[in-house]
Image 1 (cartoon, helix red, strand yellow):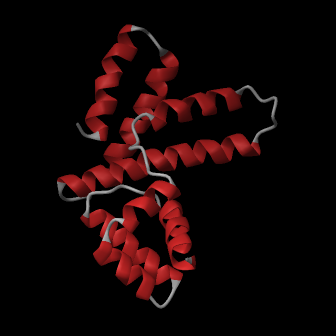
Image 2 (spheres, rainbow, N blue to C red; image 1 turned 180 degrees about the vertical axis):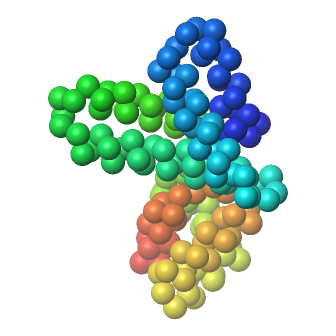
Length: 151
């Protein structure tokens, strides 16, 4: 099920429960996902764009919470929203999990080791992981590639 469909599925139960906090963040998330995915073409592109929109909302909440005083009541709401929003994001692999996966991909592993730079090697790793259907964050891949290339 797509991120947008999952968000929409949560909307009706929140309305019935009269959960204003959940309704508010769901409406914001749905609007943002719909706005950003409108120009995307293809199911995978729409899904990736939707995930980026949710990540952007989470990041924005984190930045806002960091700028507020510690005792500000809005921090609790922002942190709650992030916990709620993260359930719609795919679980990303840790750097160690990425490293283990890359070590099992002989064709990609050789290219990573032969790359001229860590940046080029990271790009090769990202492409290889995607080809194998693996979702991993850039930071985790970069850390894994650096560890592989170090020895």
